[in-house]
Image (cartoon, rainbow, N blue to C red; front, side, top):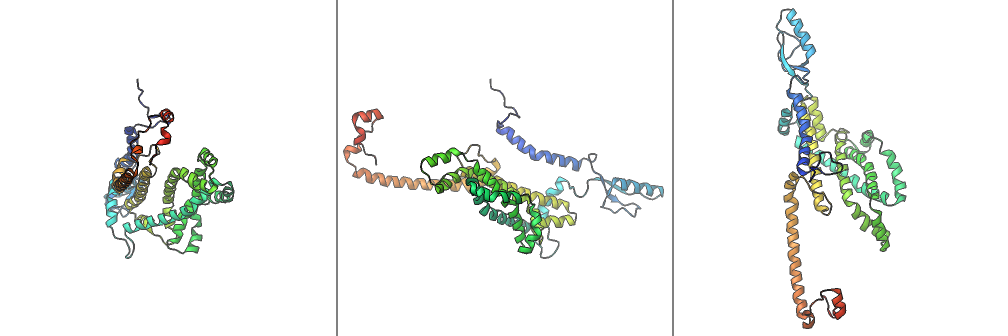
Length: 391
């Protein structure tokens, strides 16, 4: 009798249905808590939104006041025979309801900037993506080779890692003033902060990934006479490439976490500038929308990279992307790959046909029609190995 798999089985994968349910729950549960706090009055709702000021000089229609202040003011108005204020319980302005944030996703793109010449939201988003890409790729160009060298050669490990291990504990924003002094107030210091926040961690992570390569592969290559250069290029690099790819995905998410701080150094710009401006004007629905846009863009990039890894490393197990990303990326990855594969197959078939037609015509009839031996024993007994030539 087959035992039903447990939800908490140790080191055993869940069924696809259970895995999908838990993935949905990871998003729906926070949304449920947020909705309860936003829509159920007796859960929290510490503020009173004024709908009528009455005879009070303190209350202003549309403003929020604490419940204690609202109650004490109305008690004084009633004692003086004046009309009390009216209102209903709401949350603070910094916690908008989910429907308000959802509406802001569409309204924020249509809302013009407060000042003439300031960027629109889509321009700010594109600027932030450029900052991330320049900062991350510049750190990867130097960090990945240094990590591979440190993980391969102990001499480079002793040369690089002590200082990097020391400086990685220094917070990247602490270098903000120095970056502005050296690189100006434009995009230079922002890219530098992303670089500082990812480079030193990248070297150590890549070095550790390189050390995890199976030593048996190196020993087998050395037994076959591989040189030091061939060991690095033909054994170590291909061996660590799948794990190195995953490391880059994680470090790219690390770069996104430094974006807000980086864009506030020097001249404020990008999505961080938009969030900061909306917060100053108490438009916290737009603030939440801007923060979530960063998370959505980062998640889409990560899922696309995860799906792309199934095409880069098809031999690895459990490399299936999500169904949503499979549908989105199928037109960009599967169909071009299918077209190129079919085109190469047709060329190979035509080449084989031309070669076979020419070789058959030139081959002697005795050799072309001679049957291949059924086994090695038969070949050795009848001397067929010495008589048969394979083209």
